[in-house]
Length: 374
Image 1 (cartoon, rainbow, N blue to C red):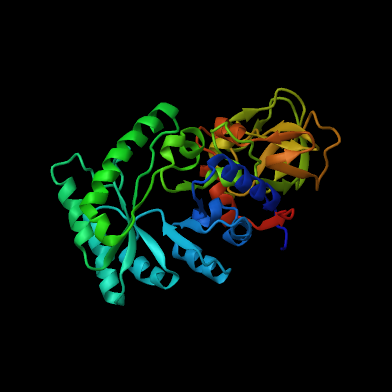
Image 2 (image 1 turned 180 degrees about the horizontal axis):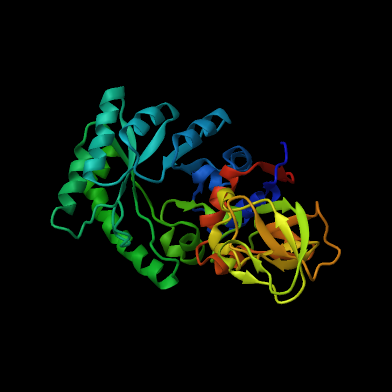
């Protein structure tokens, strides 16, 4: 890899640790390792070998590229798409034997049409709105809900293999209530799909927080994504962050007290200040909202981002870091020395979940693995 002005490091040891920790917590419940968004920006090519070595035989994807990459890497297990797909995606994914997420009757008819076009039945997981997300699930409480699920089961190109849902909140009580509703509604949906005729129906609704916090939400399979990469608000298992975002100091200048700094003059120096230019910005996924709010690490100590930063640069106040020089490593996320810019730090600075940031970094910046999974 040619290292550019910004890059990420992916710790495959940490991912292996997290997979093992999650599986210990889940016990006998099967794990679907979610590698959507190119493994949450960590890279399917880096993450999938770790999952395969751990014996994970179900993965979750959103894009066809992820499914085809998994097959090219030698994955022979099941691949589940975790969103409704367009018809052309469904047809293209059939060669990778992807099980599709059916987001309602109209969408199931698209799957059926794709199946007839390629002359094969397609396994589907029927989404129901038992948890109240109201995104892509059939609402069995509605006037036509039961008829819609029954009609999905009758489509000749559709082979029902699962019933699924997704939780809208990372709240223990909300998850527990949603899991109980899913238990009842998924049993009804299985009857409507004709489960006795089609074979066993797999029920699943738990993602990382739910699976690690409310055991009753686990059912037949859990879809764990963020926790594999060390990101979850669940506190039941010790996880390790698997990603660092890095750059280097490109330039250093000293400005008088009272100088305005950056676009819109949002910062004014209160003293003679040493400001470091770091060549990374909002085009690299370091969102502009972090300007004036985030901190970075330089020589193991924190320093504030002071400007409303630019497309490809930001400014860090290193006045209290007299030893800092051009070329020094800057850590925008992750550990350096005895300190770390945590995912929680980034969430507090941005006002968004950390995944809103790091899922983009791996797609926009060079990526390098560190460590070796045991």
